[in-house]
Image 1 (cartoon, rainbow, N blue to C red):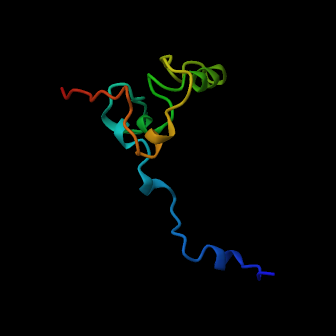
Image 2: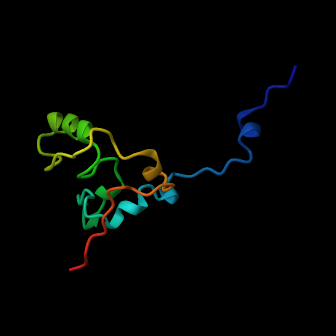
Length: 100
């Protein structure tokens, strides 16, 4: 029977991160359909699962608890797909915002 490893032994070769370095939803940063919500002076809505295209069910659920949290209703029911989250696929709705 194999000897049971301690957590330190099992995860010794793992690289731990707070996930900030993973840069989720990076293609959404300049998309015209992104959520343009601000946190202080910094835009933060693009890196969420809801935008003007994706996340209708989630947005409706949040708006029930916090009316007008999302001032728009997304078109697609589900949240952004996993390949958009982890930057392994291109969003079919992506449209780069034109600079003013």
